[in-house]
Length: 231
Image (cartoon, rainbow, N blue to C red; front, side, top):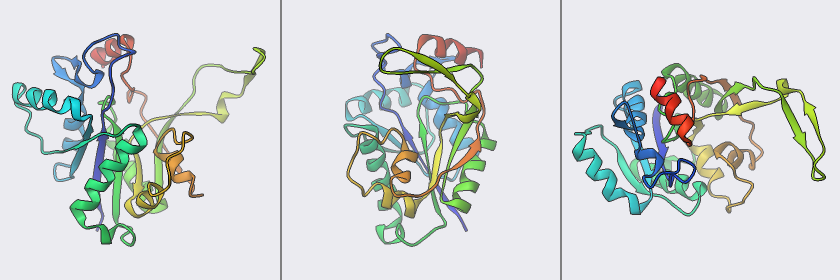
């Protein structure tokens, strides 16, 4: 029997949004983005443990928002780290604490999804497909096709078109067997780790691609926020 967990990472500062309020706390249809994201995963699986990784400096504000909006979805708050890698590592340690660290190296039925706090519109079908693919193959990420023409720019400024059919845009939740994820995050940090899949691939483990949903946007700019209001 599978046991599923989700880590929601929310460490944004709102710089690209041009806002003093961190982007995960900005509102869509009158509710903070981060609440919409947690509500989405809770409605997918009400009994699934949710671990929220949040900078320590933002936790008091989040707790105030939870009181203000009467937000009662169960979740465990963990402090973020200096990088996304270290934030996910802190969330992973919390899950290991929940289940007992002795299980993480042997139990392939334990699965972990890692999701961006500012992606509230991932579909339940995509979440489930990622968990199923991770249970089967160990590692899975949702992706969507590139629809616009791509050009590769060289160091000298010259450029040429590359076939867009060879590329995919990566989304979250990136989902893994906990045993594999624990081994991957035991590695020393590298600047080459741009997402969780890159950490796992550094072990030499392949990552399965799952079809994502185009509405699963990462809300980082005022334009994204306008699109989110429409969605």
